[in-house]
Length: 192
Ligand code: GLN
Image (cartoon, rainbow, N blue to C red; front, side, top):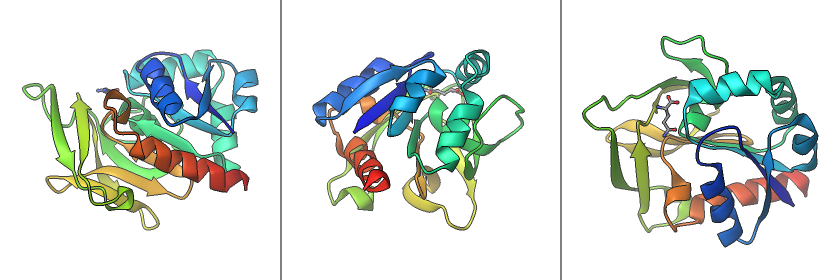
């Protein structure tokens, strides 16, 4: 099993470290040929407009969409979640649009640039999950079939739709590997 981490901009190294801590092998993905080798893909946090633009320049949008539609699991964190969304409030920026969610960018306002919070994520067990939010988006709406995995003050901040997983926060910035393990299990199932 090999996991790809989209490595155009943002926190891709941290995701690779988190995957290594979970015992999973990963490679950086910048070209369609690299994408072909992987069984699952993580799209990191960073700046969604920049990553989207680079995905277009590197001709990655269509190949990633194709693999996603064919069942390859994709995990988007923060900017990565924005890029997975079908709808981005008030924006036409490039995206994959694979998940039936509507997101709001920079949703916590300028004053609260970043913060940490203990979340209850029932699919990960009873222990709270320390979540780091950095200029974070949240999910405004989900279509039927999208499973809400966590909320922060009513706002949806983690969700799953079939083989797609999205988190508004940065699970790669803490030592809690449970969300990465959860994704790795999705990948395992997809190739079983
Ligand atoms: N605000 C960023 C965006 O809209 C996301 C921030 C992040 O990924 N930490 O792309």
